[in-house]
Length: 258
Image 1: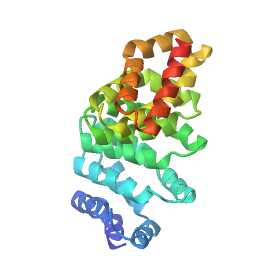
Image 2 (image 1 turned 45 degrees about the vertical axis):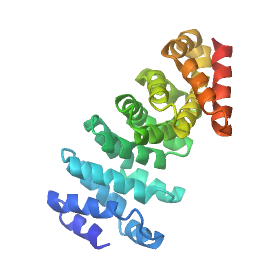
Image 3 (image 1 turned 90 degrees about the vertical axis):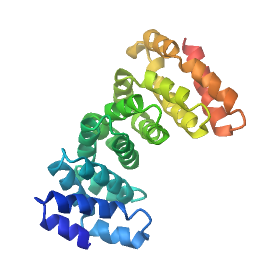
Image 4 (image 1 turned 90 degrees about the horizontal axis):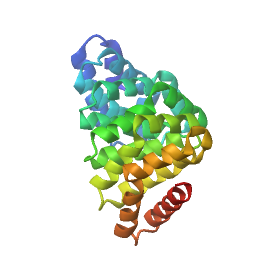
């Protein structure tokens, strides 16, 4: 509460804002009641204000993104609505766009987006704000980062599920190439393989829908190497039931729509 109060009182002091964001990030392992007190004191609002006011300050952006994810994770839908209204999605998208080459910021931004999207309304707002594109870009730019890939595909699966608009945004942003790069970069990581397959299974309605160019998009998926990556995932993780199920489903869908 003291940190939130200090940040609110010293909006024009970049030092206070940076230190405050760092202090709030350190609440990762704090008891739930401490996080609740910070939430009730307006922690989301001050973090959003800091990110808006100091877009050029990499420390503020990185620490604030990390703190936002910590604060938003496991909150109720009602609380997440508060975060949405405060402008969380917009400032996080701005941070991701402003620091494309910064791996920690990309991972943290993907983590926040993964935490706040759960229903159709949130999917629509995230898509309109450019969240799909920045997450795909994060995956493309940081194919070698396990953290980025895990958080990117967890979030993408949520954002494109049942949303034709977001599915189209993902395809146009390059998700096919990004998915292949992620699977090739982390062949031994079952969780990366699983999350990419889940996201691609959610994407496949676009690939199979004549209105979106079934033949062209399916050819793009096959040409990008998706099928080969799925086969490799099945071979490498045949003992993992979750990977086997998702990869088998994806392989069947690609083959049937080819």
